[in-house]
Length: 347
Image 1 (tube, helix red, strand yellow):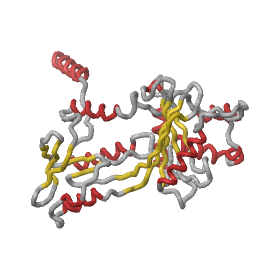
Image 2: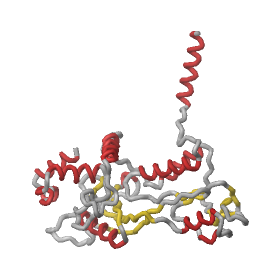
Image 3: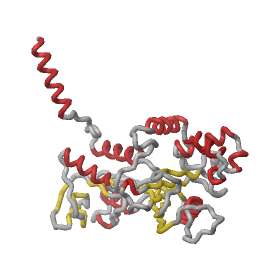
C-alpha cells in the first residue's frame, strides 16, 4: 500500500513528494526491489550490490523470513496500521515488564541496590558471588553482566587458572562493529498529520559513498515519550568509525530537518531541530562459563537479534530447561476441570 501511495503522490504534482530523477532513470525492477523491498521492508543494512563493502549479504531464505514477518505484523491492531509497535512511555518499560514477569515466576529483583564488587575464591580466583552496596554478599554459580561492565584482568590471583583467562577476555571486549545514533527533538512532524513513522535512507541515497542504510524513527506525544507539541526522532546506522557515523547522521538529519531556526520563504518547510545529540556505540558480545555478558543493543529497529542471543544464552546456562514454557491460564484450568467432571458423569 505504501508503494502505491508513493506513486499517487508522485503523480499528484507536488515537487516535495515526487520520486527523484535518479530513481526515475533507473531500472523499474531495480527501483522496486532496492528501495521498497530490500531496505524499507527487509531492513537490510549494507549495500547488497557492492560486494567489496557489503559485510552481511542477505540470503534468500533470510529475506523471505523478513518479508513474511513484516507481512504478518501489518494491521494486527486497529490503531497501529503499520508493522512496528512501539511501547508507550518508551523502551524503558521493557525492563519493568521483565521484572514483573520474573516476579510471577518466583524470581527476585531489587531496586536501588547496585553491585559494588565481585567475590572470588582466594585460591583459584574463580567467581563466587557479588557484594551489594548494602554490604550483603550474594553467592551464585553464574552471573550475567550488562555489556557496559568490564572486569580488570588482575582480578584473578592465579594466572594459570582458566578463570583468569575468562576474566581477562571479559576485560578485553570483542568489538564486532559500531552503530551511530542520533536523537532530535522538533516541534512539528516530518509528515503532516502523522505522529509515528519511520524513514529509511538506502545505501547511496544520501551521497555516493554511503554503504549502509540510515533509519529514522519518529515518535510523537501520543506515546508519552515527549511533551505535547513536540516529536522525538531517533537516527541509527552501522559504521566503521566515529567519523563515518557522524557523517551519515548529519546527512540524514539535513535531508529531513532544518538545523537553523531561520528559514527563508523559498526554502522547504522542514521541522526545526530544538535539540540534538550524537553518540557512537560499540557492538560487543561475550559469553563465559561462570560469568556471561549480554549483547549490546544493535542497529535494528526490532529486537530479533537480541531475543535470539538471549535464548541461546539461556540454553547454555540451562540446557535442560524450556525457554519461557507455556502456562495455562486460570480459565483454561477451569475448563479442563469442568470437562473432566462431565466425562466422569458420562461414564
